[in-house]
Image 1 (cartoon, one colour):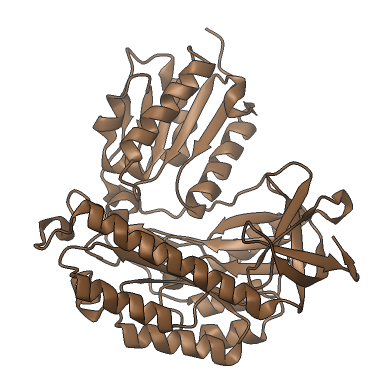
Image 2 (cartoon, one colour; image 1 turned 30 degrees about the vertical axis):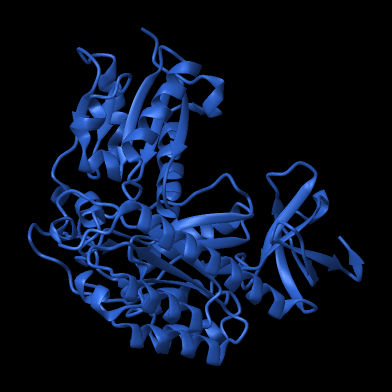
Length: 447
C-alpha cells in the first residue's frame, strides 16, 4: 500500500486552534505531504475540534461525513479539545480512524504511520490531560495579512462552567526568546499583523515542566513579552486576542497606549455583570474591577476598541440578575459583545448547581445582548466617521471586494484594488453601509 501523500484540514473553534492546525500542517509538509483543499479529496483528513460549543458532537460528525463524501477511502484523524474530553465518543463516529489527545496531537505523524497497520477504525491515542506538560509553539500561515501566534496554552483557573483545563491541561507558555524568533520568522513571510493567542495569555510566564512534579519559577510576565515583541522589525501590528481583566494591568494598558506596534484593541471576558454570578463562576474579579479597566483604557486611548465576552443563562441567573448585567454593560464604554448561551458541560461544578434557566429563556437573553452589541458597535463606528485611520487591506470573501480593519478594529468594505492588498493605507472613514461595515475614501477619492 502506497503511503498517503495528500492531507486536508478543517478547524473548529478559536484562534488558538487555527494556529495549531497550521503548525500540524507544517509537520505534514516537512514529511513530504501536500496540503489540498478540503473538497479536493485527500488521503488524510485532520479535523481540529473545539469543546466550547454544545454542538461539538454534531459538527464533528458532519465534517467526517463531508470528508468521506469527497474521498471515501480517506483516513480521518480527529484532534483538539473535544478529542481530549470525549475520545471514545469520537472514535465511535462512523469513518473516524484515529483520535489524538492533547499530549499526542503534535506527534500526529507517528500515529498516522500506524493507521495502515491498524486492525480497524476508531483507534484512540488520548492519555490523561496531565500528560500535556510541554509547550508546543505554533503559528498560522496562509493568510499573508495576519498570523495567529500561540504564546501560551492551558489554564490554571477553575471557572465552574469551563472544560478547557480538562481539555488542555495546566498553564504553560513559550519563552520570550522563542516567541520573538517566531515573530521574526512570520515577518520574513511578509505578514503585517500578528495576533497573540493562547488560552489565558495574560498568565504568560508559567514555563514548561522540566522536572517531574516541579514547576519552574515564573521568570517573565506578559508585560515583558510584549515589550520585547514591540521591538520586532517587519511587523506593523500586534493585536492581543483576549486577556483576563485581572491580568490586564495598568502597566499593560499604559504600554499599549504608547506603543507604535500594539494596537488599541482589547478583548476582555466579563462573563457576567452581576457579582453574584461572577462568584458562582469563580471568576477572579468583580464587576467593579472590570469597570476600572475599561475606564483606564478609555482614559489613555479614547479611540480604543473594547470587546466583551458574556455568558447568559448561567444556573441561578434570575431575570433581575440578567437585567443587572444588561444595565452594567449598557453603561460601559465598550464596543461590541461576544454573547454565549450557557450550556451544560459534563464534569464541571456548574452542572450540579441549582436554578437551571429554561433554554428558551437563555436564547431570549442572548438575543437581547446581541442587539445591544450591534447598537454598541454602530455607536463606536459612528464616533469615528470623518476621521483618518490606517487600514490593513485584505481579500474579502465577497468577489470584487476587499475588506480590512483599522488599528482600533473598525471593519471596512471597499471595491477590490489588488495593489492595496496586504498594505497599510490611511483612509477617511466615510459612512456605515447596510451591512454594518464602514465605507472609506482613500487619498480623497472614494474607494
